[in-house]
Length: 143
Image (cartoon, rainbow, N blue to C red; front, side, top):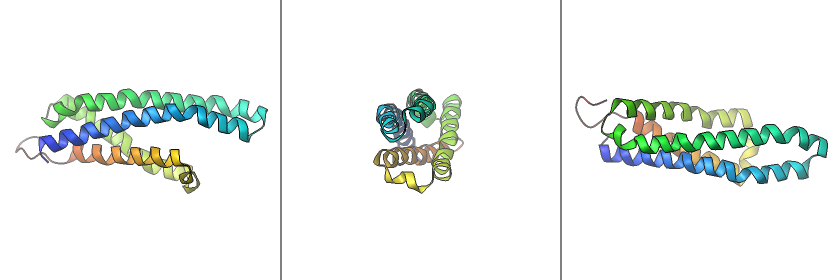
């Protein structure tokens, strides 16, 4: 894979992770409203804190993860070891998420458009990052 293609894929993957973080934070109030309107006040009071914590923490963590990947992209594309470690670590950690979502959440959640959008963004980022982080370099001797 050429350095320019690797750079584009890593930047795309990083940008998609940032977009997913923003989406996660943006849908939190809608999910909170859905919980409040679909359950009793007592159940909503019990369900809301862990849901909000989950969405806010994940959204906030995705922002620097994507930003760091985007930042490291040109350095990883040219083979700098620190940057290769960063993008490979990001790629492997993100790679487990699509399968985990499907196994843990089940197919019923794929009827919700925000969930489908988030899964599509995550899968796109996953494929771009895995391909760019682990595909052999076109330069002899580069890793």
